[in-house]
Image (cartoon, rainbow over all chains, first blue to last red; front, side):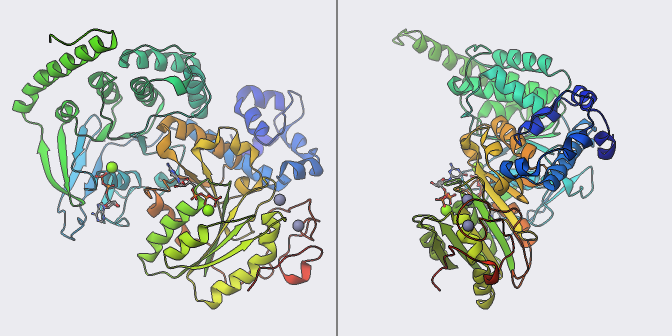
Length: 332
Length: 227
Ligand SMILES: Nc1nc2c(ncn2[C@@H]2O[C@H](COP(=O)(O)OP(=O)(O)OP(=O)(O)O)[C@@H](O)[C@H]2O)c(=O)[nH]1
Ligand SMILES: Nc1ncnc2c1ncn2[C@@H]1O[C@H](COP(=O)(O)OP(=O)(O)O)[C@@H](O)[C@H]1O
Ligand SMILES: [Mg+2]
Ligand SMILES: [Mg+2]
Ligand SMILES: [Zn+2]
Ligand SMILES: [Zn+2]
């Protein structure tokens, strides 16, 4: 529906169809009433002095309403399908050409390895920015084989990339359930309540220790927060590409977490030195001096070792649990 | 000369973000001037001077710093032009949420941080609501979902703005922000320009609703920076 048509609808109808309108107006300190008045009539009768006190002009309010509705309605549109992501090499920090063209497809997991300062985060940032030779690395990123629309760069509705970053702290004063609901509502997903329940359930399956829906997000453990963020991303995010910047540490079932994300047919790139995650990846990009120096395909021999690594990991986990429950480790 | 007004709540990361942008612009051999406005004291001018950019600072004392800003900014723009700056950036702390230094047709940036609470975007007036670019800092301290929720609250009160997450310490995102600075308003003078929103309540002509810039419009308690 067009903005101008919306203006002519009665508030009663609008609030039923677009409940987020109420919150939009209340964010400016205005309250919409469920009446037969049209939105246009409501706007026209607003007192200029009241608006002045609220720090907004009639003109700005209408402009914001227009932009906000356009954004909200765009959330409903299907995002363009990403069938492939191509990285065209640029130059490393010494100026040598990377000389590579690498195409990634949905469902693939690519690991990015290399020492601190080597350029792992920069590579992820190049992808997020859909670089076109305009970043320090001079890399180019193609989507579906072509130069993508500039809108990917600044869009908040159709973000190309969802990032799961190192830090998983919360500062908001909300419970886990309230937090996820607020996130789901901001995404305008259909049936938010069902999504919220599913996210909490998934997160509890990934987390080592269970948490309740009314646990404040600020008191979740590191593992629980990470589990919540992964479940949240898998279920709420429509972004076709997922970037994970160094999530090591235990406290969550990493294998299940990765499987959950892979199931959503996303392209996953992750900077990691965790051997289990690295072997679960299809390829490893080795970064040196700001450039992709080598591409390693996970070999069958390596894959065979994966189960041994998992055993080692489980052994450590069991020891961790024994410590947690007050046992001693005099005998392993 | 490209001119941008940067404002935001105290300690939101304005200086950090501007410094990261300065680094990116200096790599392209650009000449930069910064004007810092504050109320009681600031050491930001020292941080800028260390980067080798031209700096001017003004302290408003008992006046609302935004009223003080608008009484002085025209002269600062002339100063930037006289010194052949490619970029002039003003930094002002939004101490009163009702006033805002943003000027029509001048690229306006608001810096706000992820730690300030989900209701803060609603509490800040025209400084946030009329900005062209909203920079959100300190994303490194919170989770990605919290960043998204916070950004959606910002988008609700300023849906037309470009909203970017920048890390003021590592500079992540600053390169991308710099491309927007390079496309910012390009001017030689502020003559004839107007504020985006009036600044009522206080003592000078701007308190009375004046939006025009220029000495002839300034009456009452007007303070001038030392030149
Ligand atoms: N963790 C983190 N800290 C930041 C970030 N950006 C800024 N800071 C820190 O926040 C504090 C305030 O940053 P400033 O850049 O001085 O903030 P400001 O808005 O210029 O402050 P005033 O000019 O005093 O109003 C400093 O200690 C910065 O190091 C960020 O992205 N992440
Ligand atoms: N090819 C390159 N050319 C120039 N600078 C680069 C290149 N790759 C990375 N850098 C810079 O090197 C620094 C460290 O890179 P970063 O991605 O943060 O490393 P890591 O995440 O591996 O620790 C950053 O400032 C980044 O912009
Ligand atoms: Mg890194
Ligand atoms: Mg500062
Ligand atoms: Zn004021
Ligand atoms: Zn005044």
